[in-house]
Image 1 (cartoon, rainbow, N blue to C red):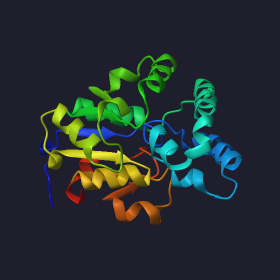
Image 2 (image 1 turned 180 degrees about the vertical axis):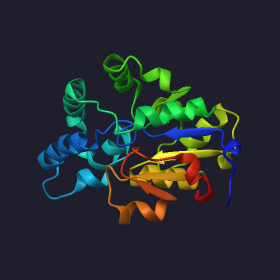
Image 3 (image 1 turned 90 degrees about the vertical axis):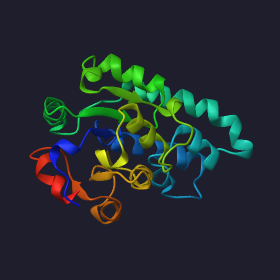
Amino acid sequence: MYMKKNELKAALFDLDGVVFDTEPQYTVFWGNQCRLYHPEHPGLELEIKGSTLDQIFDLAWTGELEAEREKVVERLNAFEEQMTLDYVPGFVNFIASLRSDGLKTAVVTSSNRQKMENVYRKHPEFKSYFDAVLTSEDFAESKPSPDCYLRAAARFGASPGECVVFEDSINGLRSARAANMRVVGLLTTNTREAVSPLSDCQIENYLGFSLAAQLKNL
């Protein structure tokens, strides 16, 4: 379906792997935790990508392991404090171009507000890039439910057809698809083969990427 540029009202971004190139770091952290608690389930850290902490715990830290949740949270908080938060290449110029074109922009993340406070400390300019930041506390159902993206669209008075989503995780891509929004898949976390069926186009990063040029295909 062809969509004129001025028919797009909002660009909605996941955080990790979309704004920040952090997924390799989280893979290391969760890989260590999963090997410690679930040596019988190799690759579990890949299956939980894009999940909230509550979802991860409900899936893999149940029964006797519930007593270990607090330790995992402490390790995660300490890990996030020292994480490197590098923007995905080309992101800063790309988001600036969207905002200069009058598009509303939002982060829609499964991370919690505590994580975002760490982001704001490390990147004081972060809030200037977005009109809204929605965290796990802001929606009733987490990805792959479409709830988070539908709430973000409603925040701007936009219909799903007036929104484009930037996602990298399988759960996030499914969430955007279920919301009936156009989807740009970042290849920072998963292979093109995994991302392609759940997105309208795929990019390695934002360098040289023009949303206006892609709208006719989205």
